[in-house]
Length: 278
Image 1 (cartoon, rainbow, N blue to C red):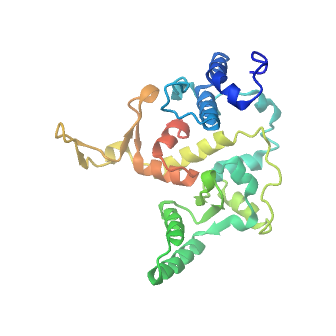
Image 2: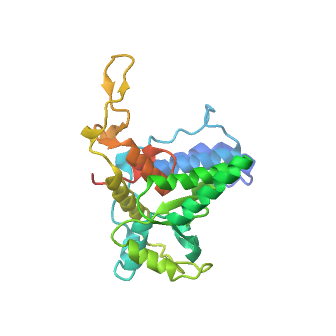
Image 3: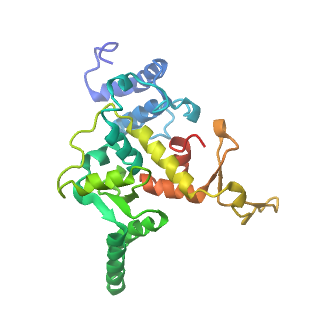
């Protein structure tokens, strides 16, 4: 704006150029996800509602156009997989986000026995006096009963401030558990996490392994629902992908388990962004 409209010196006067700037970003080849994010941020800054007729209409987002963690990047050349072997294995076995990995401490290794003990304690307290915060904590702890395994990482502040317990899985689970056991309670498990590490890609591998461990064969999922229009039975627990993945079927129950482990609420996020190579 300063280059093309030097007379613009305040946010109030810059508002009129918001759509022009977003269009320029689109023409520069920025991804639809980036444009959507910037449009939302600027809309919030300038108080423009998405329903407003003057709100910039970003290009549609298509799964096939996602490039994050799908192709080689310049940063990959600056990241040694051999030197960061333990970090990579840790990420693939815990599914943590970068910020969660950075904040993880020795005390955040939790056993199933500890979780069950806390559930019992909270249930007794709830019987005496109901507390909404305690109920939310209980729901989160009960979610661990979906997962296999005996050890979990305690994510104290995930995306959106959500708390969760993520199961430690995979062939390197023992190595991960040992590292956390050998870390002092208040000490960070990882003193440094390379900015060039493909954390999202490792989370995708974690999600895919988690899905495979829990998914039923599609043909084994019962036809338990009836279409009111046609009267035909269909599989209520089967998720059918759309667009470029149209026709691919996934087990909704296994998708929910993946979603909970990753710290998401919607199963379609898992289908669109994490589960790969099935």
